[in-house]
Image (cartoon, rainbow, N blue to C red):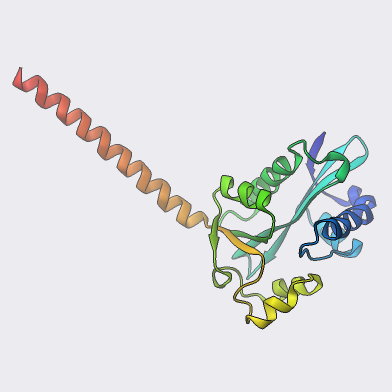
Length: 204
């Protein structure tokens, strides 16, 4: 199994990717935006996607969408072909697209909306946090992508404030602050330990 950054050589998989996304929505009975082969091809040609291949056979896929003048990016369309499910492939694809997103758009907030608990768990492991929709991109083109979802009427009725999906966000600035706070706490703790050891030596 190989997971690679997609390019023009993978155009031949656009139809099967589109069909797999559509079939998954029917089987799960939950909301998932449909993606045409033409839509998929655009993601393949700009290097904003990863594809999993078993030799020449399609196994899985995920792509990056850029919103708000590169202030936000979404990892979307995560799909694994039925023949390859239950092998941990989705997690590997998710990690690969997240790494690609961080490399190409290091300052962007990475977000996603999903109804799937497994995806939520994968996002959480990568550092995402559940957020309200108001903390996600306000780019209308992103939300237009939900129009093919069976639950779109819920989104419109609530003025785009909530739906059956859960919004999740990875904020690199916030993560850096948390890292600095953690390092500061660790340094303070180490300093206290050394001071206590020094005082003990002096009292002997």
